[in-house]
Image (cartoon, rainbow, N blue to C red; front, side):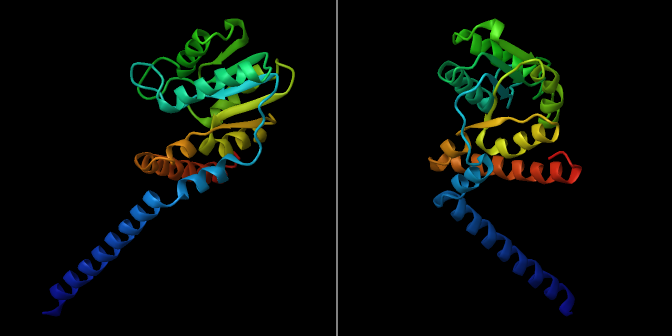
Length: 213
């Protein structure tokens, strides 16, 4: 006779615990700077604004082949950085994603060209579908371009991206884009930023297990 009651009591007990944990997490993410701290940890401390070759990694892509938010933000910062940092060449890395057949690097390159960066200074890598492939497929292009090379990607992506390139023998200085850090400044942006940080941290663990970083 105690079996069903015991089972129901255990279920209620764990339901209360789960709801309490969710409430605690909601409070932490909504009213504390945990996103900012996390993003700062992943972006690192170096911020190099000048160089010869700017390496830009693609981000999100919409189904119609246009840039998602992270790709747009990286392209906009890449344009400003190229103008102010004395760069001579830019490499944009990114193949099709998000259900599109158009490489996202093409959309980013078109945007950057429209912003006034010379087309002959823009090199596109159009096959990669992951951060590791960004490194693998960009390496051949980078080996033909002399000078100081600077990596530009979102703040939360910099930790993994820079180490992927280093593992492949390509040393890059870092120029993180304040993506999650900017979103964490407004309460409605904190949960999307938190989820990006959580997913990225899981990817870091996976890459570490595979020996890619």
